Amino acid sequence: GSAKTIKTNVTICRANTKYIEREQQNKSYSCADRTVRDCRAEKGAHVPFEVHIISKMEHAIEITDFDAPELDVYARLTEGQLLNRFEPEKGMFVAETPYVILRALDGGYEPVSILVERGVNRKGAMDVIERCQVPIYVSELEVLTQLTGFKLTRGMLCAMRRPRPRTLEEVLQNQNTRRVVVLEKVMNPTNIGAIFRSAAALGMDAVLLTPGCSDPLYRRCARVSMGTVFQIPWTLLGENWMEELSSRGYKTTAMALTDESYPIDAPELREIDKLAIIMGSEGDGLRDETVAACDYTVKIPMFHDVDSLNVAAASAVVFWELRPR
Image: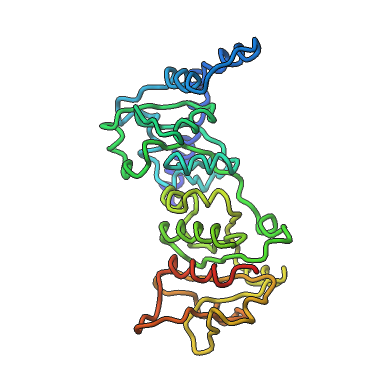
């Protein structure tokens, strides 16, 4: 790229690094209650849950200015900047809503800081605060509503470190991984999130994404998925993914409308032990080369002259019908 582009990306990397360093410095202030709690525990004293929360919130850092640098990760860095392609080990993402944040914590994701609306008292939010030994930023609703989509966050956001991406071998190493979903250039983050939710609920074992797909850790993806992006294994595929799946014993099934397509309830499809279900983008569907390379082509029978469904809606039908038996 150009020198200007390189310079911009270096600046982004430095911004992420400085943010993480600042959070580590702030950590001692937001968690000052820990010493008191540990000392009381050593003496056998009982410290109620509510006291832990009040103590933590008393040491929270008040944010009154929307331009405060502590809000950069939540308000000003784009998803691409948070991803930090040039230094992925410094990459971050933002999880929204207490429920989704708890799913991420359960999945082993590491928090960096929390941003919470003053006065939020939902139990999920209190659970997040209790579990995280990180800086807690508190602000009034009037400040936080300047964040795009803040009303959808249920009063809480959490900046987290991006983990090392899994390899395909790591995702598929479990012998019980019998049903995998392959998404080819599905770019809409809402659809990605909905597909993950259906995949987790309806018996799929993993989700694989080709280059060009939206990132599952984008905040809208994670929120729409109800945190299932942190539960179901997933990874990004390379160029020769079809051959890699075949070499691991998977039969490939393209979801496409052709004259040769099997109906989705065909009995022979249910008998396949290891199946990769391949779904395409919202507009163009799967590439012709992908369809031609698959072992099967499958369609959902429809009525009233409707010839297609949204990919997220279709995924729920497909996953239920082709779930492992």
